[in-house]
Length: 301
Image (cartoon, rainbow, N blue to C red; front, side, top):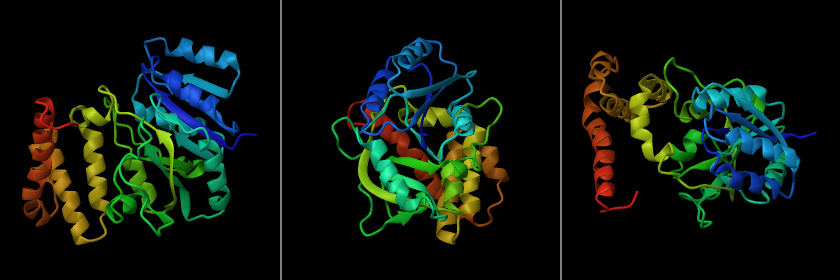
């Protein structure tokens, strides 16, 4: 019986998902389920997945839903999952040939540790280069939040979770919105659990022009409720004055980003509301300047 679910949310990625499929077929350990939740694709994704299923090379479960956004697809996948381990692999990404085996090897060491929610491994690009930094030296475990904020890890990472923990931390869903940052859930998990750090590249990705990473500001504007929910949660979770100052600064930048000055005027953060304003303005302006420089080919994205 499989203990690992590889979950792929997809939307109109029929032209890309072949590479992900082929990487799963190459796995040295095929003891996994590929669970695909199609977020209402209007291209040929369904036909392509059905052709994969007919090949019977790996176990595939396919479910199609009304277009509702990645966070709803993720919730659906988590609730459908019947295995102990859950990892999300986007449809335009792929795994190293030994990724499943390395997940199992690490899982055997952490399964019984109730303080660990899962495993964090490295991501690489198509040139096998690490995306961001390597894991901090001499540290075997950390919460996701502390990995970035305290240990200064940079870049995306592959996150492998104990399914029972994810089932307790589903994404909040806001009417009329189809996106919320994954950090909402990761921050909640970080309040209670740490992750085992694996300093190996198991996951390869590239950032598409129509992907989330390159369009994040536009996405925030279209999904303001979810974005502000995340920023407010960051403030609530801040454990010291320095962290709260930083969180309020990002909240102010968020108010400007979604053009909701009233949210800033009505917020109740005491003196931090005022002393965080300059930093909030800087946080807001920096990506605008960067995007202009990229647009005119002065710097690369």
